[in-house]
Amino acid sequence: MDLISVLIIAIIVLVLLLVFAAAKMVFTINSDKEQMDLTVLWLYPFLKIAVKNQDSKSVLTVYVFNRSIIRSVLKDRDRRGKLNIIRSLKLRDIYIDAGYGFRDPAITGVTCGAINAVSRFINIDSLQHRPDFFAVNDYINLNASAKFSVGTVLINLLKGNNK
Image 1 (tube, rainbow, N blue to C red):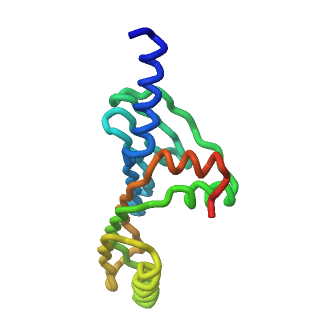
Image 2: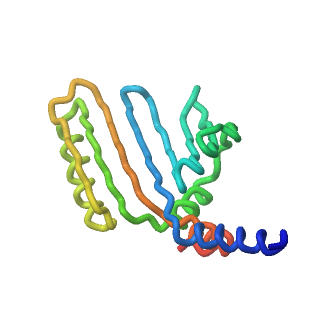
């Protein structure tokens, strides 16, 4: 087989993987440790993308086979750009586990009700939340995961079809 045939087969395999292999996104917030992390895994351990807050800056690290190949500080994007990216994800298999409490039990109750109301309008596969009505300090602990198709996201972003 010549080099061109191998290249064409490799491109076809990559395109098929982009369309059919779902990426998993894991989002974590721990207000006690002032930690907020976003991790995207695609054909793990092949590709891992991690965004972590360090020194009030978001740091993006890209790993290929668990070796860091890119590390950079992210610049702030406008809200419209962030919303376009979120809309293009078309998330599925959404799992949310949250624990939260506020010094004022009324705020905890309103938050609990709001989470229950919003969860009815979003296709969430599993929602577990534990409100703490007797919290001494305000805190939020959130672990969420979802899957999305990388190919669909790329096509939507290139087309600009983020509705």
